[in-house]
Image (cartoon, rainbow, N blue to C red; front, side, top):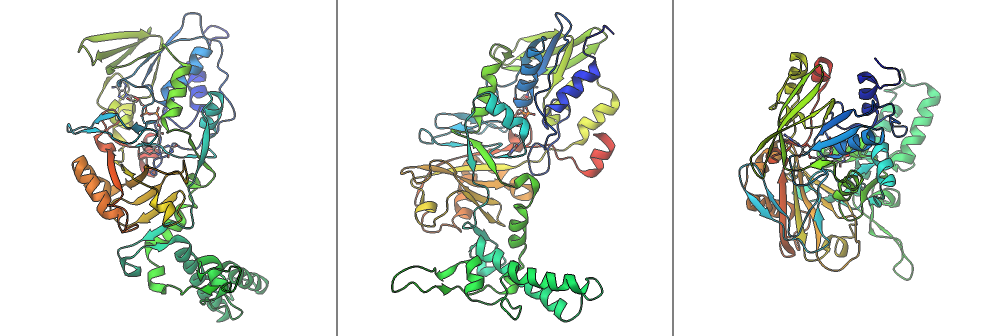
Length: 483
Ligand SMILES: Cc1cc2nc3c(=O)[nH]c(=O)nc-3n(C[C@H](O)[C@H](O)[C@H](O)COP(=O)(O)OP(=O)(O)OC[C@H]3O[C@@H](n4cnc5c(N)ncnc54)[C@H](O)[C@@H]3O)c2cc1C
């Protein structure tokens, strides 16, 4: 090995440090986020052998970033990309766009200018430091993504008479009831063995403060509980200024899984605030990356085979415009093609590696965007961003975080379905999906949902030709065996 020349191991580990995406391994959590990174700054690659070449497969963010850093380090880089667009899952659909899914259904998106649906990624947590670094470096303007909104709804078909309730009221009642029950256990000496006398006092104090209990450690309708769950009439000035507390929900309804799963959702590390989104749509990131590597990407290039020998790598691909088969050679190859697709490509990888690639299933989330004539969720329900959760197939309705208070049409996310709900929606035609989203989402805004609807678009990720799924779903067993 020449002195000063980067070894394969050094190159791969430096690429791996770039972040949680697919440069080395495609690893995504079950929630569809790239995993957190140990990123402490760009990799500082150097020492490329003069004339050394790299071929990158896939022009998603992982591929484009690999190309960017490798070219900076002195390698001669080319990217092969299946689509007529760089960005991969980093994608936005706007009025005038056309999208054809597996199965052949084509949608012509009819949103008004300026409106968009992010069918894939949509929120960037504060700890995605790699991405945030490059957004800043490449001039992508970010704005807050309103992840947590106390004033959205929680809906369960099994509780509260099937009617949606406000998150703050349900969560406050959950905490209040838990606090009261725990205080009761302490006062009935059920925890004397588990907790010291001093800590029992501290815990009681905490339960009263956190759960809004009264002096007798009871969670009751009154000004204390109302200060968390909301009022029938909030405190104000003037002759009618005296607040009227709201009534509590019954314990059975409050223990419905929709309530505590909604609360727990926000405690998930990946879902914690602060979160961001690019101004103008998620694909602003892909576009900014693409600008940095202009001229390196061959689009409409469907990789069909990856062969390697002692001298380098030969990649076979088909030009999807002409049908002509072509090859490209390089010393190195960085493959960012999703495992769901890579598992169907002819490679010379070891049996062990092939087994790993085959072993990882991809989830099949479905997203549906609905354009509404006006922002009735803001104007009528005082909801500015955030999510209303439901146990129906759509999973949630999420409200736009941009252009708040603006007149005119806006796009809300009418579904982010997963698991069984996603299977059912993916099995429908795009028109049926819109109808299902309207029928189910109406539970939150019965007066306006259908009345204000203009047009919709949907992406069922199990039908996306270039990923055949949303995200890799490693579990503990596959990780142990294959990662
Ligand atoms: C519904 C959904 C929601 C998500 N939400 C979030 C979120 O909120 N926050 C977050 O951080 N992450 C989220 N993610 C994950 C995020 O999108 C991915 O981690 C990231 O975009 C992956 O980038 P990548 O470059 O590794 O892969 P990709 O973007 O998939 O890039 C792979 C590229 O390979 C190309 N390709 C495929 N086959 C071939 C072939 N045969 N030949 C040549 N090229 C090929 C594809 O066209 C594509 O451009 C979400 C993903 C989905 C689908």
